[in-house]
Image (cartoon, rainbow, N blue to C red; front, side, top):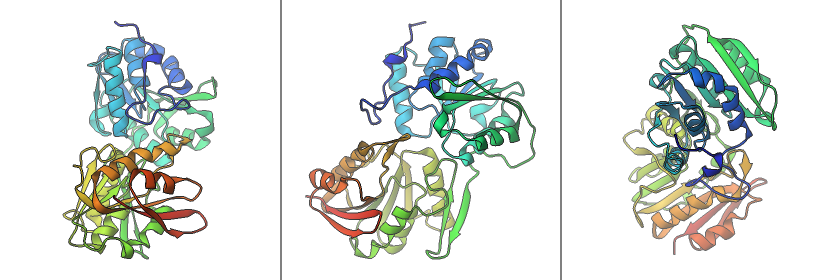
Amino acid sequence: MPDFSFDDLRRFPDVEAPNLFAVDASDRLILDEAADALAAAGPGEVVVIGDRYGALTLGAAGLHGATRIRVQQDALTGERALARNADRTQLAGSFESMALGAPLVEGATVVLMQLPRTLVALEQAAALIARHANPSVVVFAGGRIKHLSISMNEVLSKHFSELRVSLARQKSRVLVASAPIGSSEADAGPEAVRSEFHDDLQLWVAAQGTAFAGTKLDIGTRFLLSFIPQMQAHPGVAIDLGCGTGVLAAEIARARPDARVIASDQSSSAVASARETMRLNGLESRVDVVRDDALRSQPDASVELILCNPPFHVGAAVHADAALGLFRDASRVLRSGGELWTVFNSSLSHATTLRKIVGPTEVVGQNTKFTVTRSTKR
C-alpha cells in the first residue's frame, strides 16, 4: 500500500486559497474514532457520506486499508477532487461514487459522515442508513463544534438507540450512532422531496436534503424575479446558473414561453429538487435540468440570457471567489450582446468584477440588502 498523507490532498477543481483546505480536524477525528471499526470492516462494508474532497474516503483506504468503499458527495466539484486526489495518492480503484439511495448503504457496517448543514439532510441520511445498512452498522458523523447542535443528536436518536458524543479535539466532535431502530416510516432516500406552494407566484417549490433555502424563496432570488419583465424579450436559450430548487428557471420559462431553458447546478440535491419543481409546475418538457460544474458542458457563445444568484460561501467560509467561476463561464457561454442578470449582497464588489469579466454592467436595482445588475457581453 502506498504511503498516504493528507498533505497530498487538494480542493481543485473547487476554489483554492491559502485559507481554504482540503482536509480539516473533523476529518481526522472521524477517522481516528472509527479506526477499530474500519480495521474490522470487510470489503464493501465502508460507506462515506458527504466527503468534501476525499479526506474521509482516501483516509479510510490509505490509513486503514478499507476497500470497495462506497462514497456519496453532493457537489460535482467534490467528486472530481476525490478522483484527482485518488490518482495523486495512488488509491484510484479503492472506491465507487454513488448517489444517495438504498444501494449506497445496503449491508454497510461502517458509515463515515461529515454532518450536513441542515437537519433535513441529516434526517434523510440517518433514516436511509437505519433502514438499509447492516444491523451492526456504526455511524461516525463529525463536524466543527461551531456547526453542531443538540438537534443533531435528537435526529440521530430517532433512528439509532445508542448515541455517543466524542471528546472534543481541535474544535471538532464526532457523534457515534449505533443499534439502528427499525422503522416503518417513509424511506428518506433521494426521492423524499418536500414541496410548498407559493400563492404570490402561483408556483410550487420542491426541495430535497441540502438544497439551499429549502422550499422557501431566498430573498435574493425573490428580488431578482421582479426584474424579469426587463430582461431580454426573445432569448433563444436562457440559463438559470446555480439553479438551486429551480425557481428562476421556472419563472423565466413561464415568462419566455418560446425560449429553451436550462437549469444548471453542481449539487445533486439541487438538481433533484429543480427537476421536481419543474414536474410540479408542468414545466418538465420546457426546462432541461443538468448537473454541471458551472457551465462546463455548455458551448461557447450559445446563450442569450443567464440569470444567477451566486453563492458567497465556500463551505462555511465567506469567500468572494465562490462566484468567479460562475461569472467566467457565463461570459464564455453568452453570445455577443447577451445578458447576465445577477443578484448579490450589496457589500460585495461583484459589479466591478462583472465589468472586467463579462462587459458593461449597470446596477438596475438595489434595496437595503441586495443589488441586481445587468451585464452585457462585449
